[in-house]
Length: 228
Image 1: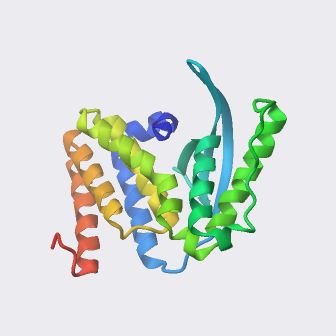
Image 2: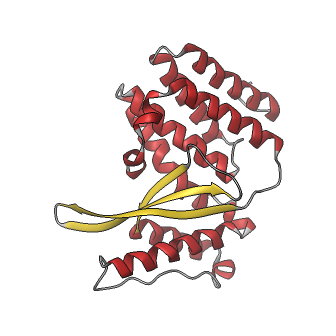
């Protein structure tokens, strides 16, 4: 998954610091019910060659307006990923999407610096416009575009015993869901469970306990959850 390629070495090694940062995010998100303005910034773009295919991979930071993120939430996506999101949203939200601009596919000059720069700005504007529309911002199509690849990658890494790599990927999935304001979903519970498992397997028991406590608080707040 592209999401696993952009993990820093500091995140992989700093389990205790990472958990404290996540707990602080949790406390802030529980205290703020109003949606905050989210900025989407393309921080880099790299040309990737794989066998017979060649594409540009865009790295995007999700940043809360007016805040500095020590450990930002990041995604890495290619043009076809954005194109699929655009197509799915236009099928479901045809009226809302009528005013949303999307960069057209080009037959030539896809890898020039000028094209990549223009597309980077266009993708930032595209995501910002989508996030400004209430129904789209809360839709599974929009949300899963951001964190589903990391959740899938984290599960694979956890199941194969690569706990340090999995921990960093679960943590990025946590931050993505926090930025997007979906910290009460079943997938957020899955993320907390994944973090707890990795911390436990790495003998970071206090961190594992902290993740379990957050999960219990979330379940208690929901009241009628089937796991209670």
